[in-house]
Each structure stands twice: as structure tokens, then as C-alpha cells.
Length: 217
Ligand code: SF4
Ligand code: SF4
Image 1 (tube, rainbow, N blue to C red):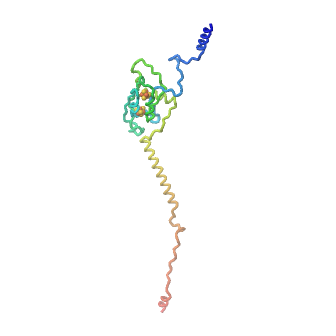
Image 2: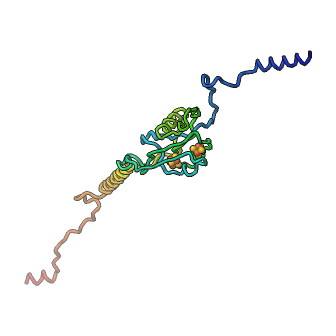
């Protein structure tokens, strides 16, 4: 009898306990702070292009070898609009093989890849988790927006920006030189101003007394 009461108490306590699971996929639990989903590529709003240069460092370090990338010449660099000589052309991650280790993020020197909050990748086909460049950039843009992401260091100057900086510097130096020249001119004496020139003694013709005597005889 006593045991039955104890069992009933346990059962009632379990029934009254707050639910910790969700009816997935109809219900989604909120993500915890610092939750790490799949890696995604970030987008440089200032240059309107990906941060990724296709340097392949992450590809080489990925322990599951689920990444591949290919770089190309950046046409925006040729136009002077970007500081990136190279840019990513194709990029693929097989998210079915990704173990979310974040090594790719740690080794990237260009702020180009982040662990996003994307984690729902249930697919029916074996290859459906091979995610290409546009999809990775979409994931990255969504992550940047929801996390107010900021790049760790400012972009280097593009060729056009470098020209503008050099022109502004040259204009500033020319203005400083012109100012210095005008200051020197204003300190120099005006022509015809006798203020600083010493007075010249008047020239007089002096006749010696002996010469005056000779002239009179
Ligand atoms: S994500 Fe970073 S490390 Fe990987 S290829 Fe792009 S720039 Fe290189
Ligand atoms: S998180 Fe790890 S396993 Fe996944 S792509 Fe990056 S380096 Fe590879």
C-alpha cells in the first residue's frame, strides 16, 4: 500500500513537471546564446561582394575534407572598386559531413566564414546537403543580419580610394606650400619703402684752399 502511494506520487510529480521537449518540426525551441550551427560565408556590404578570396586555407585545414573552393581574378579590382585581387568563384561545403568544429572559422584570415545558427538540414537525398556558394552566402547574410555581425578589421583601400587619398594629400600639401609662400611674401618689405634702408650721405664737392688761391692769381 505504502509503495503504491509512493509510485503514485512519483507519477504525479513527473506529470506536473515542465516540458523540456518540443513537437518538432511544428514547434522550435529558442536557440541558446553562442549556439553554433553550420558554417556560412559572409558578405561585404561595403564592396558588395563576398569576403572570401578563395585562398583555400580552410579547405586544407578541414578535418573531414568536406569543403572545396576555387578562386578567380576579381573584376572589381581591375575596375579599381575593390582591394581584393582574387575572389571566390565556386565554394561548396558538404554539410552532411561537417562536424561543426569551427576550424575553418579559426583559420580564415579574411572574416569570410562564420558558424551561423543554421542547423535544420534534414534532407531526403544523399547529396542534398552539398551547399554551394549562393546558398552559403544566403546563410551568411541571414546570420550577419540576426547577429549584427561586424568584421574584425576595416577593409584596405581600393585602387580608386588610394588615388583619391593621394590626390587629397597632394592638394593638402599644395595648399600648405601656397600658404607658406604667401606668409613669406607678406613679411618681405615693399619696394619704395625707405623705412628699413639706411640714409645715404649727400655728395658735396669740396674745393681745397690752395686750388682757390691758384685760380684767383
Ligand atoms: S573562407 Fe577564408 S580561409 Fe576559406 S577560402 Fe575563403 S578566405 Fe580562404
Ligand atoms: S566546421 Fe569543421 S568540419 Fe565543418 S566545414 Fe568547417 S572545418 Fe570542416
